[in-house]
Image 1 (spheres, rainbow, N blue to C red):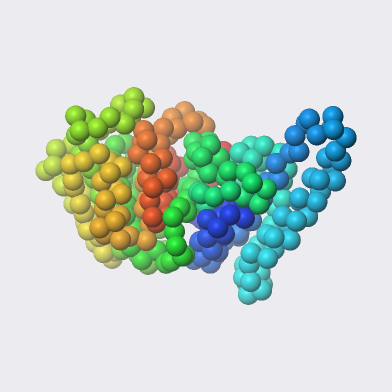
Image 2 (image 1 turned 30 degrees about the vertical axis):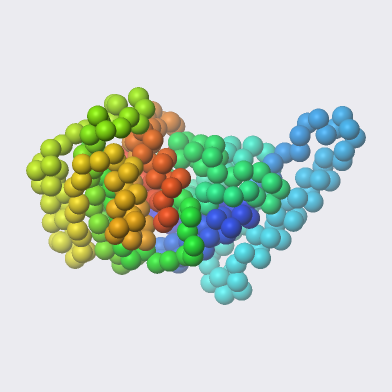
Length: 298
């Protein structure tokens, strides 16, 4: 795992401000560069027809965003961190992806609710688009009351191909932030719920005993790495199982491996990760299988 560049898109909503706090913590933990990014949406083309000075509006918004970005960090953070502030204009998803390329980001931290400085919705298609298009880990902050340390991580795995690599990432992340691990596998009873056809190619069912045996190997690996780990196997819809475990076990972070699908598009374990990102009360870290370590082109 090589997290040396942390990028956080900011729309100035409360969740995105919390995302900045978490990004600062990650940059300190991993001794990496922190990039604060704001994208000013292009002024609608029809504005010209009403003789509105679009260039002036654009420049004013960019200057205002730059001042507000600079005000998000205290003097100590600005002095201690390797900090970069970036203002872009244009299509939000496209400009975020371009900024990820330019910054050579290893992880993206995003707030996932609320409207931004100029009234636009930041979550929804924006976050979903970033999750689907980038091939680096994405940490989403949703319904989080206050920033907290990651002392207990819930690692949810479907035990499909790539799960070992995802666990290696979880293990290394836990080691760096000094966290315990709770390893969860949900045996999906297809008759109990239907999450959409997108999940069907990714279904990799195990019996309870076999699943417990697989998780036992993960726990043994954690023991050898001197990381405290517990395992849970349940029969439930994966998203329900993850959210219930998060409520009952009170982790500080949920970590989910997401399956790649082609070079730039991937299925987020059907609707599982998307639902967890939307409903979880703690941050969710989605790690693309196949690029759990190192930098890969967006």
